[in-house]
Length: 208
Figure 1: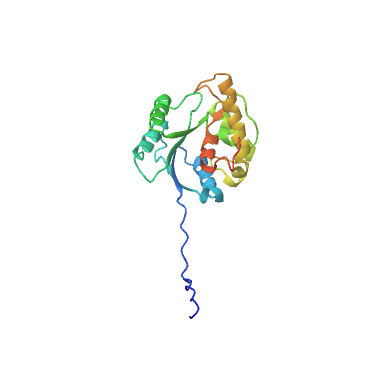
Figure 2: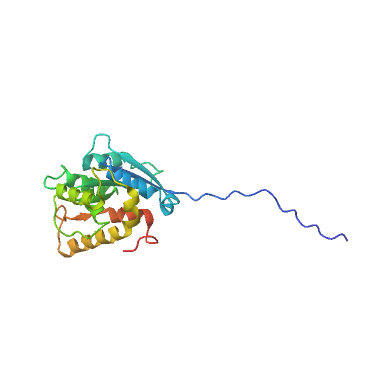
C-alpha cells in the first residue's frame, strides 16, 4: 500500500481580519485650542488603533445648544458609537441656554465634556493644580503664561504627554464639588475632559 499523501498546505495567505474601530463624533465650539488638542489625541497610537474620531467645528462659533442640536442630527447614524460635545460655561456671563443644552444631551445619550469657566482651565491643569473660582479672562491669561503662547492656538505636543495628570486633577476637582454639594454651573473651576479621555483610552491607559 502506498503511503498516505499529506494534504498539500495552501500557500495562499489568509488576510487578517481588521478589528473594527469605535466611531466617535466630536462637536466643539472652539476653532483653535480645542481642535488642536483633539487632533493631538488622535495621533496617539492607542487611540488611532482603536477609535475613528471625526471632529466637527461649528462654522459660526456655535453656543452649547447649537452643538447639541448638531449632535442630535447624527443620533440615528448607525455607524456612530458615541457623540460628544465639548464646550465652555463662560464667566461672568454664561453661554445662553446651558441647562437646555445639558437636558437635551442627557435625554439623547449625547456625552458632554464641559469646562468651567473655559477650556483654558483644562489646559492649566496639565501644569498645576487650580482650585480657586475664576473668570474666563483670568483663566485664559493664566494659561498663556504657563506655556508662553501669544494667542489661542496651542502646541499639542506640550499638553498630550501631561494629559494623565491633568485628568487626575480634574477628577479631584469633580470629587471636591460633589462632596461640597456644589451644583452646575457653580462648579467653577472644573472640566469634564477627563471623562472624554477615559472614553477614548479606557482604564488601561488612564487610571483615576
